[in-house]
Length: 153
Image 1: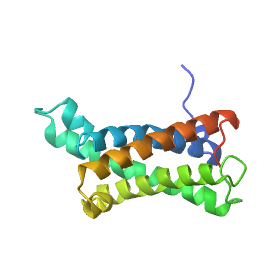
Image 2 (image 1 turned 180 degrees about the horizontal axis):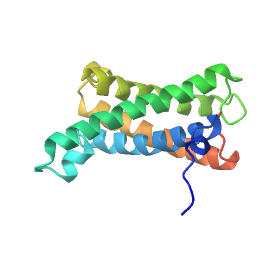
Image 3 (image 1 turned 180 degrees about the vertical axis):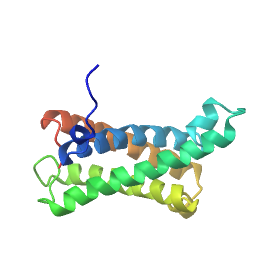
Image 4 (image 1 turned 90 degrees about the vertical axis):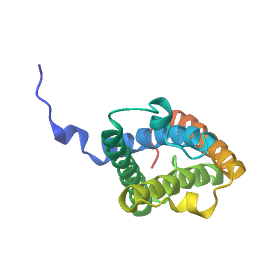
């Protein structure tokens, strides 16, 4: 078995890659949660679980990681040329910021226990519309990421 070298996985390009993949998956899971009325998917899948306390901790950790991943992508964008996929296409930038803002919101939720986005509105219609927006952003970002050589920033 070959030695694991953490340095290979913590280069700026690798961190950007991992942050993007995490954010893409998070957008899809968040959309599903919104379609469920804002209910965390894990608790829908495992509604009665003796592991409820552990699952709650892991969920909060996932939210914090989402915030960190989105914060890292925003940081890379801000210190770079402020472009997404090598350009300034408004659809790319909009989808990018939908992802980043929603991820940072979840990070804050994990740290403070209050979801700012959900406290603005608890309307099921708004949840569904935002869920659709998340899915559209995720699909757009994934397609553009693949067509741009898998480099976002």
